[in-house]
Length: 463
Image (tube, rainbow, N blue to C red; front, side):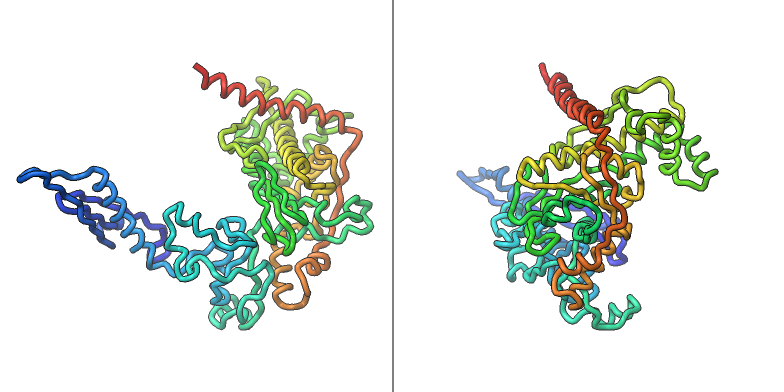
């Protein structure tokens, strides 16, 4: 919770159960009582001078007073926003919510609206009051113009003219998908050129990764979020797969290795990033074979932070098989390569789950920080067997956000038109099909790793 100075504050609830009532107070870190509530306790006198109370009634009274306190740090709130909608409100003074935020994060249905039974089930039925005024009763598709644009106050803060159009927002990963998935691919010899946009999968890869696939109708994919209607591109259903840690996993594996100080020193001497140096080092040690073949005896399962898609199992752990006693720079480079491959195998697993459920995907569109890494990109092409399209502008999330603004301004008639005009292909990376057999074998090992991990867990849980 934020205090008046916008610094995080901790608050504490004290509960006193007395003879006649339960009392509770909300107290800050300075010992100041901020709110108070009480609730009588029932008493029975079955015979003269014989008094009884119910422990269940006392517990119920405890619940009542704590809820009263919540309603006091709670009833003062005018609105509850997801961050993109808060920023839109600050810019325009309009409390309208983006369909993207509400559908993907707030259990809102684009077709049926709010579900009152859900809020009642979790004890927040008061949010239904006043026609959902605190959580949003005006919901707009991404790219819709908000109110009269920038308020004079916001315009002054931002250094822009008042009245500039402001668009209903997108979540950052969804903006990345919007910024890359609609690019005009004519002239690049891609299968998706003659196919609908639903044949494309946007992969937004940074610290973690999101896999955005769209469809004309709703497709339910086990372990993949959605389908969400109009959550990214108006008129299309969205499925959102993901990997909990990708760029973060590479940092973890590389920086935790014994040879990292040597790597860091060498990369600094060459004015390179550690990953650029590792890529060049792999080219040196691969000799005549393809670089990916260096991991023939080293395999990684990448769920060091649980699996988001398509297994949806937060208990899964990371696995590495094939380690040796040596810990030199060669070993670090090969472990890094095996981890990159494991992340790409995770994408292949997500794609296969989506296709098994009804998606038809022929091309990957990558953006985000990891898309700047040529090894990461090539491994995704080789392992999925699909071409990878990179945007001309690396910052596709920002391009996607600008597309929304372009739509709100009225310069384009639809999000789809703005996507086609503003998203540009920068580079296409094709898979090395001659290496397919090798990666198919490694994929079999990849699947065995998680199968064995579950077997190990079952053994340890047994009697």
